[in-house]
Image (cartoon, rainbow over all chains, first blue to last red; front, side, top):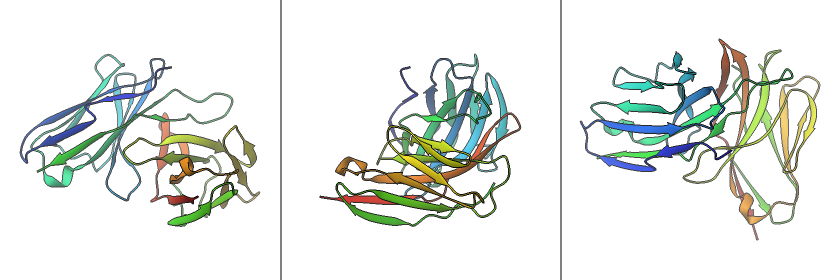
Length: 117
Length: 112
């Protein structure tokens, strides 16, 4: 279990540019979540994948945001035409369905901090 | 999902037991309670999860009364490295995945 990894850890970009982040989940986890966290707030749900299928998207995920998980392993989150309001920490989490009547446990990566100038 | 309410901040001296209480008045029958810890510039780290009564692991205990409208995270003998933000979440399996909502958390400051 090597944990969830995210790349890059930091990204600075100019308004209007496109950015892409990558998440590598724990290998046996088929569930993958993306969250966004702004300063002083808890993480907010963006989207969810089960294997390669994107099953849920938050209303926070505007049409400038797109996420993929092409082979059910790593995932990418792309933001097009970035705006200053997109500045935040983008977190990825992975899990597998709970057993024994319990819900799953989401394991988070270190996050990608995006700064839009 | 039920909204959670926690104190915004708490201070504790090193070596003391810390109890952080979370209110979730509208918790539903199939909702679970989970606590996460987050250090600056890191992702949240799972601490403990429970449904009712008491759960204990190597780092914390979680107390949930019978009505489940609140829960208390207990950290025994805190150290300076426990200074972090602690989030209480209520979540459930819905639509094939775990739906959770993070609040603003409790910022715990451990004082030497």
